[in-house]
Image (cartoon, rainbow, N blue to C red; front, top):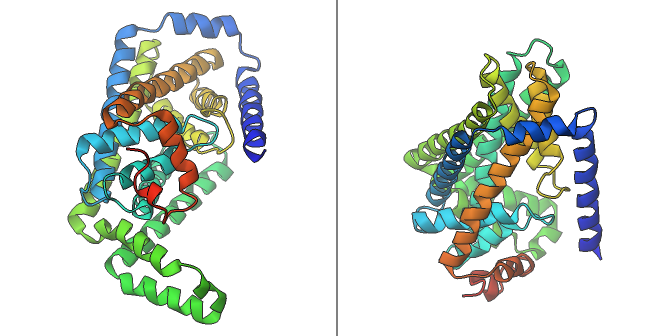
Length: 339
């Protein structure tokens, strides 16, 4: 019943945001702009999206201490991104379970994904904050919020780096909380903490940490490149294209983070429309670019996610089943989804 309610809520949220994005915009102009898009630049965007996925796969592999093959990490990530388009956002749980098939503990993989998210959030907030300074009419509240997110991201990454280099401090902190809250001793927190420490251990190595940061920058550069190529495909060549690219991609990434929606349809397009209008691009053209960017992104995930399912030898049902198995992480099924 809860899943049904969540699904209905996701559809409603997407519908409302899509209506807001389309409000006061002539649909025929949007369709005309999409029909006139240059196919060459669309192919370039698909290539950029693919390279961006590959570099993200390499980053994840590094965070797992290279315990899985580069091709496998790419396909697992692609499958996860494809599944994240579904209302229940089962992708990251499935990715952890797929990694478990290669001998990586489930919670270790999950922790590495958390580190990914922190690195991504930190970069996005920094870029967003820098971009907003180029927009004279940017609301101060948004700029301040971006700054607060940036500080929170730096603190979170800093804590992980400290615990990665001084794991005994994390164990001591847990022991302290167990002394003042004795009921915590009944929970398997020590085992969970060891998996978490295992997941962040690569950050203790300076080379691994730098590699993760560099690959984060490279992967996002290709994400920006995807949008830039699509903007060129629609004939947007004004001086504002660079600022629009940075603002649209960062705003769209926050829209994707909205947990209740269907493939972020609605919030994603609305974010790109607002970003375009902020730099002087008309609403119809901005919205057209939002639909195109979203479509190319999902198509990239669909192509490589489907190929990944075939290459790794799992069915979509097998992967989705891992979402339920994750409720019992110590169960052997989590260590091998369905071979």
